[in-house]
Image 1 (cartoon, rainbow, N blue to C red):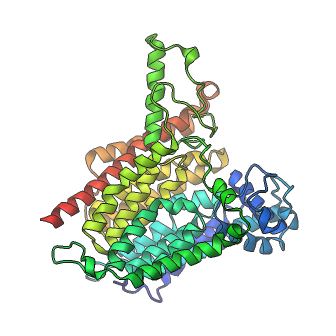
Image 2 (tube, rainbow, N blue to C red; image 1 turned 120 degrees about the horizontal axis):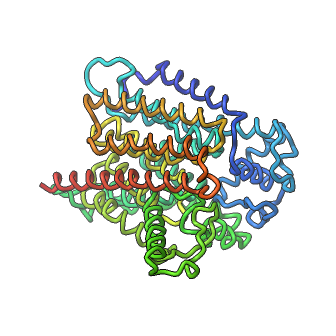
Image 3 (cartoon, helix red, strand yellow; image 1 turned 45 degrees about the vertical axis):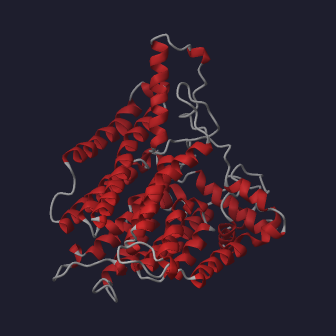
Length: 519
């Protein structure tokens, strides 16, 4: 159902232009090592033959995205040469001339046009409430603000530096096409996305099961179960042709050169540790914390010898493999099994009781959160894969709005440690507050009442205390020298509770819907 008044409206253009201008204000802000990562990839793809792209290791930031993203960098490099050719020299490590910074910042803003277009399509799919409503209280307007002005994307892409908006544009556009029942277009967009960044394998099970069940099988029995005789081989072949064609274009040259094993070794570096340098707020952060607590208690109670415990490295900014002190160490295979088990009820639900494209979207969210909760070497930024699509459900459902407020507030605050420079502290605080205030006010108005339970409100209020302690009190305390990792630990563990809770609430909502439908 299209959003009334979206065609030709001025408010969407104003929101898009406004956020684009805001992004331009961050040109001279702090940028992370990801800035050098992408500069190096520009240099590698521009200066070297294709056969050396996945072998080049002059920089420690080697090319580790799928080939389609490498071709994306190759295309950008031909524009970059008109700004500063020196940025395209592989040996110029950590090169960041003013022209280089300008180009790379502008490249993120410009490629965000894909994201803006995708948001516009998602707004067309929102179910508007009946009756005359002012623009500010329309679900389509609220959704546009929640997506275009998303706090996480603003600080991760335009301060920290990455191209997530460009990539999320493909994801949201794919979701929108499924909501519009244009399934082949949705499948094509997702296949392209997977070949741009393989982290979206997190949600591939939702796509696979949904398309098989609701596209390849064309009819259901009266009780909602699958009609096996309605299977369409031609539809399956069409989907297969799309996936194979995109993968062939992406990986084909490297397969022809016999480099597929080398490419895959870059894409899946399992020698990295269970957790990233900063623990993502997931189940393994709680597991690591429990291990540390047990180790300390064991030493205090003289049940463990401190000298025999593995050297702690989990919070020292390192990403190598490590051993837990008390609890069993976790291997990649264990995380894979945990992830598969955690997504099984969600994919089984859309197979047994399909609920259309919105049922698929809910399954996608659960797959994203399950992979975030139990995956190997998860980056904290991956929480955005759940936050952004959940925005669509949040403007349509009161219960989903409550879950969204907990997840987005917690998930966004967990990104605070990415921007640790004093100059950017006011920026991230103001942007976060503005987004939180708008989210609570707009969704409360749409839901016509309070969206949070009492304990949820208490928990979110606790984030304020954590923020003050980590951002203001701790830097002025003597603990800063002796326990430099403490703010990261506190942020990760506290936020892990909120993300885990949101995951469980989403699952409970899904199971309640299944129970109602079975009756």
